Image (cartoon, rainbow, N blue to C red; front, top):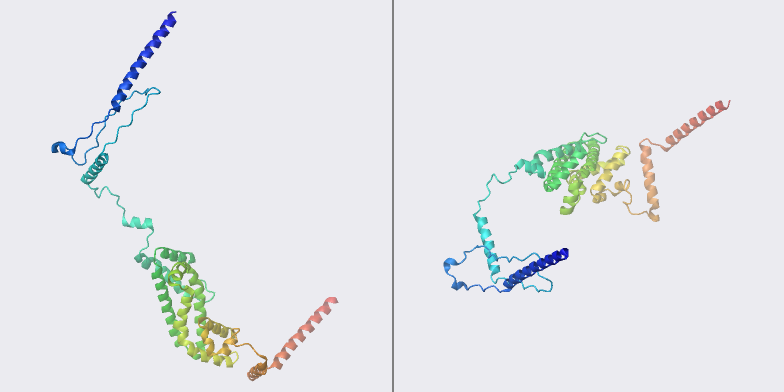
Length: 369
């Protein structure tokens, strides 16, 4: 009985507190629902009471609401209407922030990060034009000198990896134009010296020295062009629409071959008429080299070029077979006049074969015994 009375008293107390909270919440909501008074007209506010530019936003007093919230079924009131000049007040706040920023003292030199020039250059791997002239091009210059003056088969103690790395770095640092100009100037000066040496050569050594100069230069190009392949790909081919190897061959044509072709060709024709005056390998190298430099020079001596380069002369026709036979007979007579007779060579080969066969027969007979 007592327990039931205590339960009724507890329940009535909770109900009473619930009703009281409900009444307090409704009063708060009624106050919240009341519309805010309209803002006074600016003209009715005295000048001294007006808010200066950059003032703070108007603060709206918050309404304390019980955490228990409204009871179910009770509608919430509409949110307060936004103030008409809220955007203006926001702009004023922004102006105030800007004014504060302007009024703030500028950062001093001690507060900024001071990066040393040499340190920044090291971090960025910058190669200046002074670095190129003092460090990178001298390495390339020395390697080119060795490649241009080497003899076939010689060992050159240079690091191709180091030279290629120098070219790569210079191209990446936008020094391709300067490097190409220096390379052309370097090789041009070398070829001018070669041309002067050939002009001072006596006639009996002229052909051989021209052959050495031509072979040495073409052999050097086989190493120089690959070393500068990165410059060739990203500067010469893309911006100049040319090829490095073609440009370097053209240099030899202009500074050496063109200056000596009219002195060289008569000597080649004279050597052709005299068998073995010039070795066949030397003659073949020069003729093929001249054809590589400028194919138009074939017209100066088509017969000479046709002996070493196929399809120079027009194709043979049946009506000219007798002329071909006459040319062969003339060549054989010239050989006989110079001491190369067909009979002597035949008898020599026959004697060698006879001696070899007799010795082989004796050896085989002894083995069977």
